[in-house]
Amino acid sequence: MKKVVVIGSAVIDVLLKSKSLHVMKSHEMEGGVAMCEVLGGKTEAEDGVLATGGGGTNVAVGLHRLGEAVKMICRVGDDDLSELLIKQMEKENVDLSFVQRAKGKTGISAVLVAPDGSRSIVTYRGESGEIERNEISWEEIKKADWMQISSLGGEMDLLDDLVSFALENGIKIGVNPGKKELAQKERLLRLLPKFDLFNLNRMEAAELWGGDFDDEEMLVKKFVEAGVKLLMITDGGRGAGVCEKGRWVKMDAFPDKSIDDTGAGDAFVAGVVSGLLQERSADEALKMGLANGGSVVTYLGAKEGLLYKDGMEKRLKKKIKSVEENIGVL
Image (cartoon, rainbow, N blue to C red; front, side):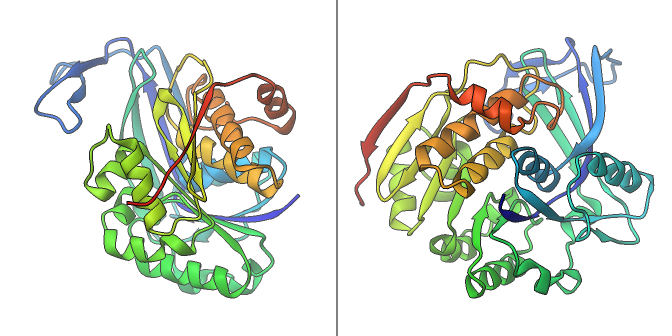
């Protein structure tokens, strides 16, 4: 069992799944696909869930279920939603002693889920994006073996501080950046060689480098040139890849039918980090990430499908196709 500090967002997810939500191609939308319902209409949902969400809580629970000792740094308000969030997290036995409480609103996400499991999310971050450096118990963090960071709401100064602290104290660090961190490209690129693990999805990788989404090899080469030690790129239903020392391995996703894609990326991160903490190979860690992400999408919500240790070991026995190649520098 390793000691992990997870830093990131904590919100309440309101998830509604409806057969009346239509996924349609649209040239007016970024990405060319939209989820639609008649404007002004009223839609019935076949299922609904009110549960904790956000990268911080999802990764923390995922790591704890896989046997790691987890403390979570996040920020919530002083409203009823914060009490619900804390109560649900207590049931998962995650250490909440680092949670920051503020006079304000707890973050909330409305998640609309289409019949095929795809979803659209509208998030009000509230206090979740306002983690205060001065309220962090830095001395306690020194005891950690690993620091895992998800979205910080674009607070790059805080990211700088966390990375510097980790390096000074021999703590390994993994980063799965949010949209606001990725938007600050130059600052993020300077930090890349300092991370022990950097994870993002293929669309984010293409947007970061301004490259062609279809030219995956070029995207990976860019990260190799930037000095990334261990890179993981998720690619939805097409699986994910890992690059270490110029060796790129792409592995298929587990053949799980999606009920809801929410939280798949966070589940992937939890599986990967747990594998690395168990000193498994990068390929094995990649497979653990895919196993966890595949399990999560078979349930509505980001946490119900997160695997425990015994469930993970059972899924790892399944064979998944992988392809290997060496990535040179440009």
